[in-house]
Length: 616
Image 1 (cartoon, rainbow, N blue to C red):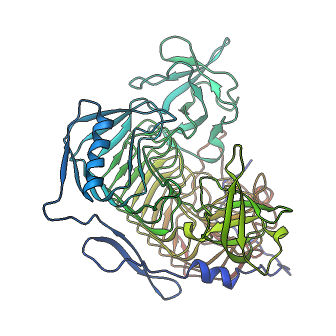
Image 2: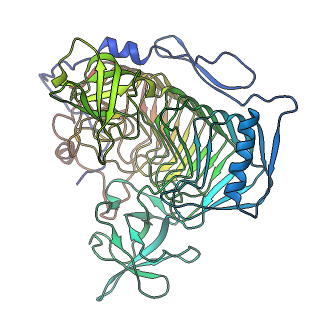
Image 3: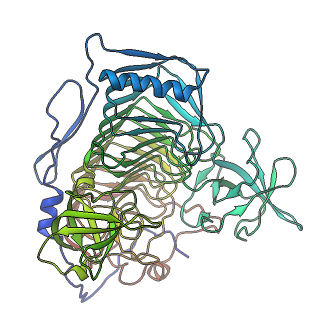
């Protein structure tokens, strides 16, 4: 059992012999942080955020808006017919004209989707504004909703997106002598025939908050069949005994089955740049709210809403905003994100698993693309230590499932047998600003920052299911470029859940890197570098305040941390004693926990400065 970690603990460790951690390679840090300022010049039609990076250089993100032409084409779309065809036909006219406005008449647009076919696909657009004017788009079925491909300077404004069939339902566990049942709440559309449960999460209190950690049960590999049992009740087998009669639960009916908004470029065509979502609403989704699979630079999501406030359970089944493969310039500002069933914001970047072949090229699992001929790549060993930089000179896909390719990379100064991971330097997610967002009442980590040259400032996170901010790279999840030159400041965290991690004290703000094992443990190398964590205010936490591992050159100053509260758990977790803490996280990982609830792992960190942090 993982326990809630108390704060008033100081471990005296006499004669500690901590080995010197392996620092981040200067060559990799130079590569990753080479361009902290956006290449987009000052322009009135640019969304921009500026700051001074930890290394003292000027940093910025900039996303260009569509360039309006005097007398430009305006194409009006009216709901009520074949809405998907009408929208795509209007987009084709704008594509031929070189830009303009797709004006949607207010009303309800009904668009069918399937797991194999997106609702609407917009491709090859340039300088186009989609003016929603408050129109409502409703997708019938589960699958990808609106997909944007290979487009530049496109803005989607004033549209609301959602699905007819909810992917998450709230209900109550009922146990009888004959069966275990799920009694779904009134006012929800019931599951369709053949529905399966992929995850159950406990809901706590009158608001139905998520508790994280030990209060969710995942069945992705063996989904549980839901069998109608009369009224709003469905029989379910194999439900864990830890869920007694009367337990309130949220039930996920999908496993990443499409996202409402998708940016995903087709290979072999010009990449998308400068895509803007402005005053957009995503009510619900069977997958993510926004999924950015692959694009160039320039993504902005501003003044938008994800999830339904006050809903009885998550309405977006998985991440609110998930950015996978982007060159850089990511601006997430003034958004409201609630009721997500996984991370609210995850700025990932692909970490490709690789192995040497006797013939010479690397065998790489591409996971959605990347490493095209001509791409610049960086090679790493099993502990994510930097080996070399090179250029992709050839790529041949291997027939069969899994997106496996033989990739030839021209590089020198390393042994091919040492290579375990490859990063595409064009997909690092370089330069990002996550500012002034409100995130709450979700089964989520609020913010995952996994790339270089970033700013996380002024966000408010309330009633988060797990921990609030994770600065992370994960070989297990195959994502993250290492957070370098990053500022996390002036954020307010009020209420976190329980997180479970091996070899590290879980905390409201966590910095760490993990390996590929099951469960993954800490990596010994310092993967993150050049971080400032300051003036963050944390209250209502059930574990630590700030924990640092796998990092070098970190400043932690003037953070305020409230005392811990009892974790919400079906098992009634309570604050643990010191021996329980040591047993739960390991002696190695437990000896740097001070009165300000700042934990620093001496085995994987170097040059950490912590000052003026206080428990309140």
